[in-house]
Image (cartoon, rainbow, N blue to C red; front, side, top):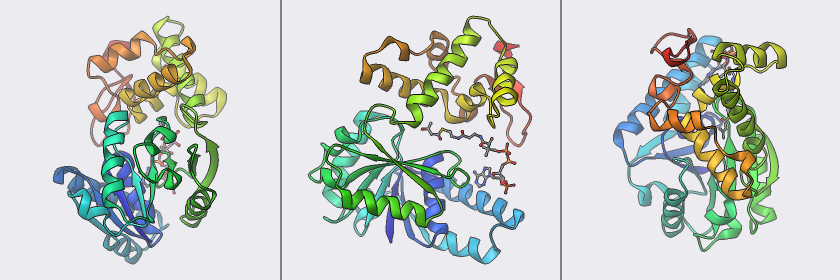
Length: 294
Ligand code: CAA
């Protein structure tokens, strides 16, 4: 299948990776050539990791990379797509703009998917002339590792499009789960209040960063504590999703913790900015609590 991925960030490069590894022809589209270069380097590094572990051969790595082409022109990048998966920043206006453009340039039969983590698929679909062909395809980070694809049906998404996306997700080795289109869907409606509560617990001084994460890791068998996970997802993304939940349901229980708002305002975005609840040094896997929380 010809699949175009819009946005070469953390999620976009992972999605390109898994489709290309499954033998699809992938076009990775990003306005920034630097982002495209970085994404291809990341995909190469992640494939190397699989080769080292023995889950992929060097030939399969080479074929996977050959299956990916990169372009910074949207019109060109989607002109022969059968499926587009948009993985741009979690911003409504940006996504609406992108979907208008996709609708204008992608072939008539092309399915338009969004990897949005919380924004209404029905709203995104309304920006196009093909709402029956718009669907949510929500991958989890790190995409090559996590099995889930949350498949979100918008109000007008057709049965046929849903079936195509469910079948395709299974065929690339993922486990798709079909859900309906309400703010945060299932994944982030449950995950983000937990993360927000962990931040609130820290804010009120009930426990320190390491203590809160250890309780959830050792007590609830979570692979990462909620504060480490927030850093991993990006604190700006967590805040954006909480705002979508708050606005979508009008319920104060989704109000983001003031500490989260403060940290995002201060540019402490977690792993990607080098500091959140923990400090990150390139090349080191050590988990060091950030200076503000020591
Ligand atoms: N690409 C390919 N393989 C990768 C990888 C990547 N980017 N990152 C890790 N791996 C592989 C490793 O090679 C390793 O493989 P083996 O099991 O075959 O040895 C395996 O994943 C585990 O990796 P590590 O040993 O390096 O590290 P770990 O055991 O600490 O696991 C983790 C890392 C998989 C990220 C684990 O900590 C984890 O599952 N964390 C929780 C992740 C999570 O909850 N993700 C969802 C976030 S929410 C989201 O994405 C959606 C949203 O809308 C916000």
